[in-house]
Image (cartoon, rainbow over all chains, first blue to last red; front, side, top):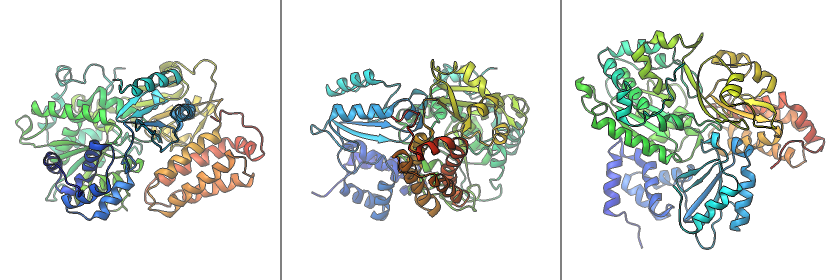
Length: 163
Length: 418
């Protein structure tokens, strides 16, 4: 089935384009909007976006693959992103990652079979004073330790993303 | 002294206004743009993103006589490992940033300001969008601001996970909807920046200092701090201290005071080994050097390092310097945009060499190879990302050579290797 933007999405996209003197400047914000819908950006979506912005598909593909926040395959309901840069490393992020691998039975870059969790190791999230830090979808969880991590996983397993 | 930037209970516009907020904007709009620039020049405010370029001078580079649009861009792509000050500032005092942007926009004749914020800061973007809407509703942003005839719009623009976009010309590429690959300079952004028009790019913290400078005067601000390093600076401290976090101090404060008085010293049982004073790119200081240095542009340069973004990364004796450098090398290799060969290949070689040390496959000769690869990258690329990799490598090797030798000799590493 060919990919089509909904009218609602088009209206929202036009508003975003209007912030810039050139509408193609909205490329990255629109990719983020697309990702918001399904958690990833399907290949057909890239083509549709190229047509919408009237730019070459190659540019959309290039941008979508240059920036690391864009997922090109479905991710779990909860995308666990553990920072492993210097401050988080010193605060024990490696052992948190190890614990998550063990508890979830997946490695970095993988998704659990039930589609609930995707695990990623990421670089500095900019919250180093509260290391170690993990981002779940768009939310930060800070000053983590094993007990907090276990409690958080329990909530997430029951479909609750704590505020 | 009283904080200029980090204030409590001013996140909402009513509270910010009640505390005197947006009065400086009104004052600025009553001055000529050149007078606003002169006041900022007088203040000696320097860029707080890392490079330390004089802010007023940067604004004065915007050509006065050119037709066409000019742009103001706020660099909120906070990504230098160890840095988390702009996040705190945007959450606690978003209107200081917006007011600073409106004043800067007026000074350079811009009609639009974009806040380029890192993609992961979704909540922070929400706070800014709310603040922008509130400021627009009160007439501080938008058309004919406070009846002055000056029009200025502000938009947030999220990035999508690329450290390189903190470099100002990569940021411009990204803001235009391209991959974040830095531009060759000249032309400089002040002549040909965003959408080919004259553009000023300032860090969040730089812009947030502007309202106070306009309110109290450039001389007042210049008198804070020490010598050429004027004003206050946000220092974000991470690592095994008792109270990590963001602290605002006058420039020139001793690093020792920051660590002991503000941060409550090292955590119990931890002993200071080294400090990276200005974000992961800046050369590391030994404990002895750290205890003697002052936190300003000149003192840190004299100590062989840099003030950078003010990200103070504290390292204790339990850490292995080789392992920490490997963590940084993985990061820079991952974030190199791939445009320049010395960076693209050099960061990769450095990571591979460090993997060798960590896996017990390195020889003593590899220490010199590591150093010479870094030396070969320094100053040979379009942007400073290669330098940002080379500087920690060279300083780690110079100051902690013994740990690299121990790894090469197959001795058990004393540090944590988690």
